[in-house]
Image 1 (cartoon, rainbow, N blue to C red):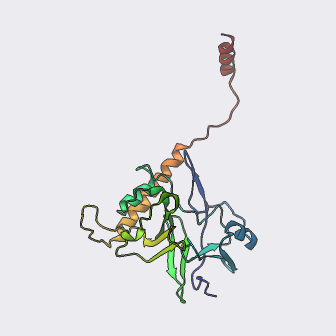
Image 2: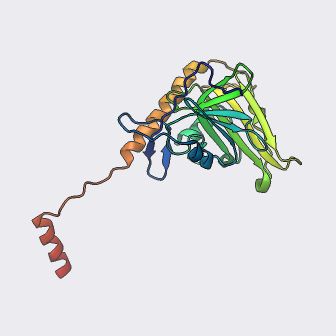
Image 3: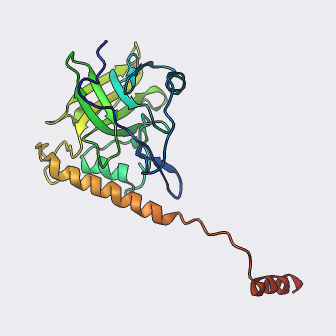
Length: 251
């Protein structure tokens, strides 16, 4: 079996940053916080529709078949939450990082709630298997863009219209009659279909500079969210506060 591991070590850690309206999982373990190693049974329960294999350093999740990306995902023994959960947060708010990222890549959809992203590292195994290891945006080199089309929305707009120089992998997985499905693109962080100032679709391959902009934007957003949620300290009321409360209720 082609394991996608080869000479690479499986490395993935997890943390959760609580925002004002949702939890954003970054899959990075905070230092000093230990996460128990998962068993094969636990991982199979987490991904019941996929083939799951345990190797010495972690787990391999084969997402093959209808609506799937035809990719083997590489996970470590220790992780929390769902490291294969795509991010959709804030697609209707321009100050949110995912919406900003699509605009930054010059990808525009009328139904943006159907598009998600997953950060990580992509490579091909020696036997040609498509492999992807989820990572936090600060450590990731690539991202998967997933668009769910058809079905109730009747929207079959393809991600492939946004393919330009730098696309590493693409896959369209649909139903037998083509009524619904999903498109997948794997691109470098910093990918852009065209220059924002160019209406002629001219391509740009300066990914590294834009990748730093993406990482900085997400880091700034997450730092702001840490400051938004403040848990007040629980303490006993002072004598003056109790007296004020009694006077208030008497009146």
